[in-house]
Every structure is written in structure tokens, then in C-alpha cells.
Amino acid sequence: MAATDIAQNGLGGLYRGTYASGIMLEPMFHSDDIMRNYTIYPNVKFKQNITMAPSLSSITTVNAGCTDVSDTCTNSFSVTQKVLEVENVAVKQEQCWDEFKSEVIVESYRNGVNMPDLTGTQLADVIINRVRNGIANDMVRNMWAGDNAAAVVALDCTYASMGDGLWVSLSAGGAINGTQMNEVTGTSGASAKITVGATIVPSDAILMLEDTFNTASSALAAIPASEKRIFCTPNVYNAWYSALTQVASAGSVDYGHSESQVGKQRLYFRGVELVPMYEWDDALTMLGTGGQFPALFTAATAGIDATCGLIYTAKANLFIGTDVTNPENELKMFYDEVSDKMYVRAGFTMGFQYGWNSLVNGCVLV
Image 1 (cartoon, one colour):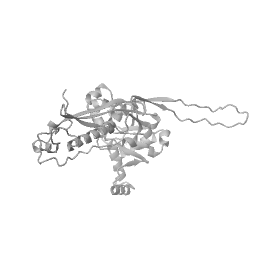
Image 2 (image 1 turned 45 degrees about the vertical axis):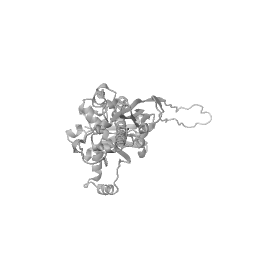
Image 3 (image 1 turned 90 degrees about the vertical axis):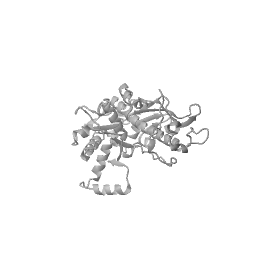
């Protein structure tokens, strides 16, 4: 099958000018700071065995003196193991200069025999920028929504490029209320509960956040707030922002005013940062349209696919395995004189896993 140019010519007869003076890049959302929100295991080529040692308690006893030779308060812990398995990931794109040669943008190409060589040109910079952003986007959505199931691969093959994501492993491991997340009954309309990205009322966001906090294990609650994150669909984030800035709510006016003055970009609930996961909405839309909704978001009681949810966990409980700390470091673009094409190549390993069930909690709105 013939390859497709990574950059397509959409200028047509609408383009006017003597040369390409500037190219405006469409911003790509990045809900995640990879290094700040997860635990990275570098140099993983195939599998990483992670030894899990639980806490130890109930081992102290009353000292009865010299005659006390045995400890009646004995206890033990079992060392278990989690396997972080990575997949070989590749980026293989190409660009033929012929795609743009008939436009005046050709004036920004190299001069001479190697004019098809885009190295160092503005178009090459744009292509590399878009590829880097695309890798970052794919990493986050695969970390959560990656799925090797054939039906999911048929919808979008990139969701299998890095193996199963956390939605699959959390459900398979029974991390949150068995295979599905806890369910919170709110007052938002029925359509808001099943429509990806729909607006929910602020009170529902409060219900979800409070329920998740109140039902979390003591082990998770005891971890310092700065070492935890609440990953959520963007409508939960926006509804919580609305709750904080409602004029009718006591104390909200001052909070909202200070935010608007300093341009604050992070929201917190009881000291824990909320991370809006825009990639979740993309994945839920695709999976819902294809009838392959993730089990973690399937609400058993209501019998619907919930599209509004959050996951509360410790940063150290979510693992990323890779053989390079930053996959962008492996990205290269080069020109081949035989084919007169530019090639973009990157190769690395990537995989995801979580640790303790006790250090993760979450809910969906039904």
C-alpha cells in the first residue's frame, strides 16, 4: 500500500504570497505532565518485574522480662510481584516534496539539485513539531485507554501500539469496586451522564469528589496530598471550577477573584491536584461509537456507559516503562536521494502498569 504524506497540501488556489512567511501551529492539548504525574521506569526493553512489599503492623508485644523468650504478637508480609511489560513502538512517516512543489511555498525550499531535501526548512520544523506533539498525545491516551482487543484495534490501531492501558489493567485487577468504578447518582440530566464532554452541574462534581475521598482506603488517605493526583474527565474539572467561583456560594467570590488575577492553571480538592484528561474524552468517544466501551466506565446499576468519571491515586502507584526517558529524543528526520522523500522515524518501548489496589479509588456519574 502506498504511503501517505504526513503533511497534506490544503492550500490550493486560496494561497497568496511570494513565500511562506510563517506557519501558525494549531495548539495541541496536553493534560498530562508525564514526568510529574507518574513513576518512570527507564531502560525497560521487554519486561520489568516490580517487587511489591506491603506494610507490616501488629508486631509489638509487652516485654515480660527475662523469662519472655517467645513473641505472641507475630505477623508477616508476603512479597508479591507486578510485571511491567512494554511493547515495541514505532513512528514511521514520510513526506514527498512534490506535495507542495506547485505552490509558491516552494521558494522556501533548498536551492540546487537537492531542493527536495526539506532538512532545515520551515516545513520540516513544522512536521517534527507535529510528530513530537503526536507522540506525547498518543502516550497519554494509550496509558489509560490502550487496548489490545481486536475490536478496539479495528476502530483505531494506535490504541494497541503500546499494549493494554490502565483502564484495562485496573478493571482486570479489580482495583476499584471490582471490574467497574464506584457509582455516584447526581442531578445532571440523563443525557449529560452518557454524552462525552457534556456539562454537569457543580453539585455533581462535589458529590463525585467527596464520595471518592470518603471511600478511599486509609492507606491512600494517609499519603501526603502533594504525592497524589485526581485524574478526571474535563467536565468534572470544569464543574469543580464553577463550584469554586459561584457568586452565590460563601467564600467563592474571593477565590474566583484571586484566580482571575493570577491566571492560576491548577485546581485542587482538599489539597490534591485535579488533572483534566482531555484524552479520556477522545478515547471514550471513539470506544463508545464503536461499541467497545471500557468495562471500568460501564455502570452496572444504571445499565449505561458512564462518560463522566475520575480516578484518585498516588503518583507512585502508576508506572510507565520505557527504554528512553523521553521518546522524542529518538525522533529523527532524514532525506533519501533515491526516493526523493523525507522520512520520519522513531523507535522505543513503552508499557504501563499500576501497583496497589489500596492506592487507587474512583467513580463515575450515573
